[in-house]
Every structure is written in C-alpha cells, then in structure tokens.
Length: 152
Image (cartoon, rainbow, N blue to C red; front, top):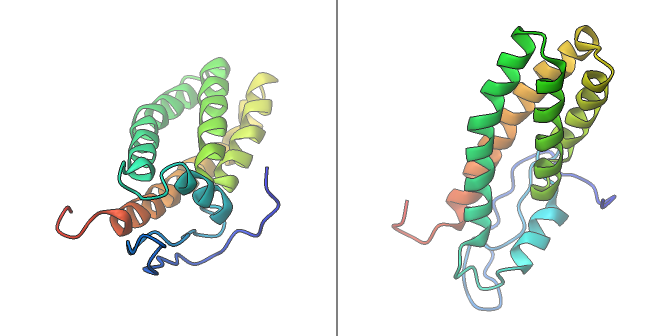
C-alpha cells in the first residue's frame, strides 16, 4: 500500500491530459480517496475511452448497496460471521479504489468480529457506514468529472 499522502478536499482537476481530454487529472478526497490509487486506476485506461474508472466505481457502489444492508442486518442479529464477511469484502474492494480509511476501519472490524467482539466493533461499524457514505459521494463527484460532456 502506498504511503502517499491522502488529500482532504475533493479536487476535481479539469487539466487536459496528453490526449487533450479534460477531467482526467488525479482527484482525491483525503481520508476518502487516495490520489495514487486513482492515478493507478486511470493508468489502466489512459485515454479514458473505456470509462474504466467510472465502471470500477459503479461496481463498487453496487457492492456498497448490497453489503451495507447486510452489515446492518448482521449487526442487529449479532451475527459475528456476517459482520466479518462484509468487513472483509469491503476491506479489499475499498483498498482497490483508494478508500484507505474505509479499508482500515473494515480491517479493524473484521478482527473484532473474528474474535466475536461485536460490542467492541459497534463504533467501527458506525464508522464503516459513515465512511462508506463519504466514499460514495467522492466517487460520484469523481465519476461525474470523468463523464464526457452531455453524458450525465
């Protein structure tokens, strides 16, 4: 994992890339999205023609829409295995998209759930829910910046 600093304000760069497309500059929200991770994802689709970043973010949001209700259900039924599974899944996918803080909290909750310490994990679960919303908002802003004009 990169030790690059994570920026705190959403910076949607509209600087042109070498191919002249705007909206391809690295953007991140500190504590929310890691700029290096976003840059690495963008490098996989350098022209932006495949809209890879948008597709990856949409897939992540779909996962959030499925996993967060599962997390809340597992919490309410004291299902430590369910909490652990959701935390583990979100930990990995969050790290992939650069949601470093979300990934870190998920790792902590995963360990507590593995140890059946759901009371201790309660604050972490709340942090997952809160941070997931911040990530969702940051992804929507970043994705909107990457859409071609008129495509929104």
